[in-house]
Amino acid sequence: MVFAHYATLELENEALCDWHRVRATNRLLSKPEFLKCLMNFDVTPYLLSRVDAEATVDQMSLELGTCHFSFPQFVELLLRCAVNVGDTLEHKIGSPATTVRLAHPCRD
Image 1 (tube, rainbow, N blue to C red):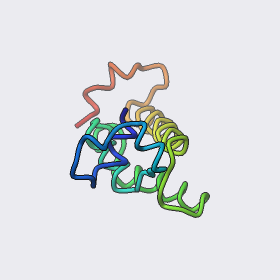
Image 2 (image 1 turned 120 degrees about the horizontal axis):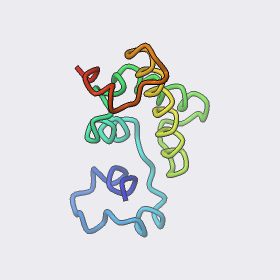
Image 3 (image 1 turned 120 degrees about the vertical axis):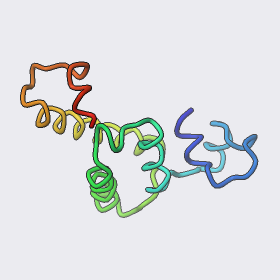
Image 4 (image 1 turned 60 degrees about the vertical axis):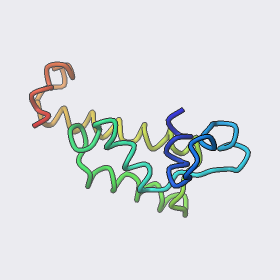
């Protein structure tokens, strides 16, 4: 699972990076781990700027009063980023009717 992998990046033993251990130890995801996830999946910088991604994380951190996120909060962060991606692509391509596939040249 993606959350389990990124929430355990600092652990040296990959055998400890499973969902059951993450739940048992109440592992949380930090801002740098979340941003690394977005970068590894090419969300940043291609679909969403790093500045916009950081602003999304910072806004949620401010609302929650924490800079570490549980699995449900990770999902919410992904959804917030997805909304921002949609807004960014619509602005880049100028038409809400254009598909993401047609927006591929906008990646540069």
